[in-house]
Figure (cartoon, rainbow, N blue to C red):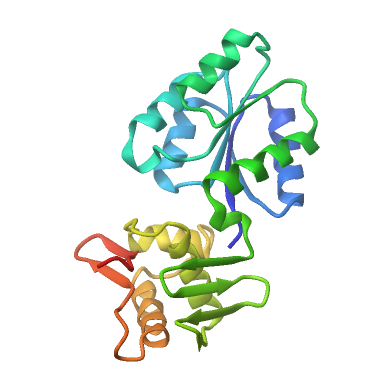
Length: 229
């Protein structure tokens, strides 16, 4: 699963440079040019990490960070702040507001990429590792293999991506529309009911009969991966 990074930056040249370099590193990148739009983008599709400028039109970066940290669904969203402010008091304020890391302009792209990898590895290890386990399910992204309780599970490409995404967010409920955007892509038109079909295929492959169904259907809401009793 390609990690999705939202860059909230109002300097067009820097935003374009960030998008180009991060895409080259294998990330999916969306650009937002002000704080208000950035918050809307987060509401529409939850990113895996936010690169957030301090000085933004409409809503400041500090306020964006504060609002994201105040909401349950974005409380643990990784945030790296970019700013021209180099004073220690500013860095402390940014971190106290909830930023996971802080980079002062000008900075090198190599350093930013290293910081992104470090934050994802620390906060969302499922995005930084080639092999992820949850309960008795193990997914190997390099070999493109899935096992449950040591048993090989054969999945199609869409079911593999669907399971990978759910395993990155265990316990969280996703609507069909959110899963469509994350697994199929926001630029692809697929009917929401298609999600039900692929969830059904995934369930059939994961469950042999005696095993507990790890995929929970939440009425009128969507699906989640939940292996807890």
